[in-house]
Image 1 (tube, rainbow, N blue to C red):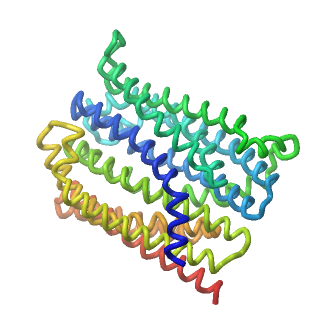
Image 2 (cartoon, rainbow, N blue to C red; image 1 turned 135 degrees about the vertical axis):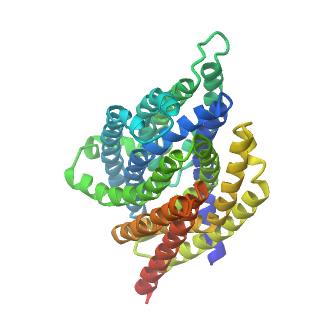
Image 3 (cartoon, one colour; image 1 turned 45 degrees about the vertical axis):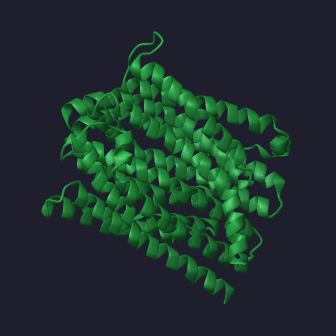
Amino acid sequence: MLRVEAGKTIKLALPIIFGELAQIALHLIDAAMVGAVSYKHLAAASLVMSVMNIPFVFGIGITMAVSQMVSLAHGRRDGQQVSHYFYNGFWLCAVSAIIISLGLELGKGILFHLKQDPEVATLAVPFMQLMGWSVIPMILFMALKQFTDGLEYPRTAMILSVAALPLNVFINWLLIFGNLGFPRLELVGAGWGTLITRTLIFIIMGIVILRHKTFRKYVAVRANQWKIKWNTMRELLHIGVPSSMQIGMEAGAFAVSGILIGTINPVAQAAHQIALSTASFTFMASMGLAQAGSIRTSNAFGSSNWPKIATIGKSTLLVALMYGVFCAIAFTVLRDILPKGFTKDLPVIAMAATLLLYAAIFQISDSTQAIAAGLLRGIKDVKIPTMLVAIAYWIVGIPVGCLFAFTFKMGAVGIWLGFISGLSLSAIFLTLRFLKLTGKRIG
């Protein structure tokens, strides 16, 4: 039974994973191409991503409520409610995106007050402006993606995300390096590439949903269901806000740690960006599995099928364990090779290789905690897991990292030891809670 459910979850997860990998690949491409200009440009990109990661991830968390409520209504075979949740969810995400983007624009001056290298901060400001505005089309695209994912049709978003990769590479090639007569914009060129790419995939995704026969029936009932209702908004926020806080606290821990590493020196910051980008790439598979597990448990939750929820959860956690072991081995074996794809600077390569060894250690716990959190979202348990995540990252992870980094003078390595402690504790907390809740319901 576990094998059967694992197979169904993986089948749903694979298109989501490829879509997530394509999205993170856009950042990896930007990092690699910007790193070819100089390591200070790479450090500036790292600084911007660290600062904007918390608000951006908060927006992504809000979009997750769309897939949860759409999946719940779909499990009840209520197409009109599916359409209603989609419409309200989209506008909730739109408002969130605009607020986040304006906040990043108005707050860009903070880059000069984080004790970073002055040249790095100066390079970062125009890049942050462009990345801030690109948040709007990205979150809107994610809202549409969560709608199709909630209906268990994830291939549309995957195809668009994969197709965006060569487009982003081409625009970067034109604008970062000034090819074919275009101006050489370096880091700013990478920002324009991201903004243009995100805008195009959002527009195309919207056209597909409005016109494709698969989704047409949910659009056809818009006269009755496409109305803003505050009760619906509250339902979405009940899931979206705690979900945002959960993933925001993890992303925030990594973001704050990146800023702390930036106070050490630009070499450590560039190495941190390389190691974190690589670890984020493998983490996207865990996120895909988490979303698939969450959608399937939410669907079963709609019909109160607790034995099925427990089986889906246990099988998905076993997959997480196996995937984490695979990634740990891959990072250990390839730690001296992977950084060379980002930079030719030898001190940065050496430091990144060391950090990748620590990244290998937390692969199992990182995968497990992401999937356990997704399973709990699927059964609408979000408040207590949010508190557990806060304890793991902010009461344990960050203080432990600072202790090792600055008191024991271990530098960037000390911060990454904090990652290991926080992720491990989060994985234990969330897994035990899911097993306890499902066991209690079945008992």
